[in-house]
Length: 170
Image 1 (cartoon, rainbow, N blue to C red):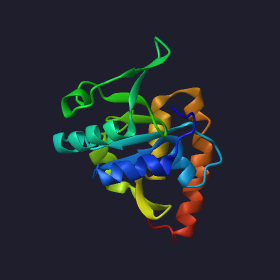
Image 2: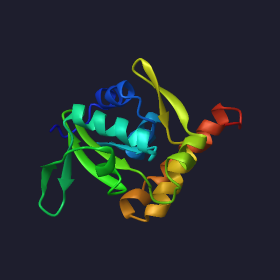
Image 3: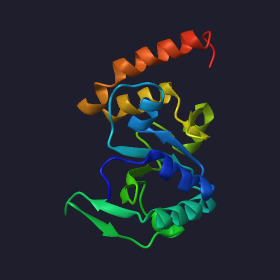
Image 4: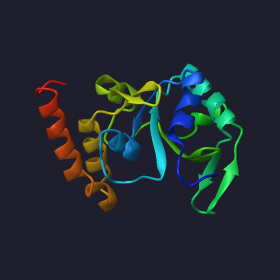
């Protein structure tokens, strides 16, 4: 398991399996121009059964293992649609780095909520769905952790600049 994610490789795998998701967290902020580094890729996938099945197949291809913070190690899992329904948050290691799956990110209604305002951002040779900056702010504020709160002023400035560059429309 590599410490820094190969974001394009992970997203390519999700795309091949036709997984519906929105990129959230630090990578989303970086794609909008945030200077803060991150060590994992966070996604909010659609929780519907057919999408969970596609996601489970992608996780198998990625060689995903669950991170157990209590043991400090990765644990092999049999990824299935039913397995993914057991929890709302999965912290994973893959062949291409860390991947966190959050079906219900703090402060949101999950995929349907985030998908409404998602932005398509070019990464490599594809457009990827990324959480709107307003939603990134909402998630950071709702999490209430100091490490999240320090990002909010930067995200607000990025939002201001983004609105300015878009002529005030989104």
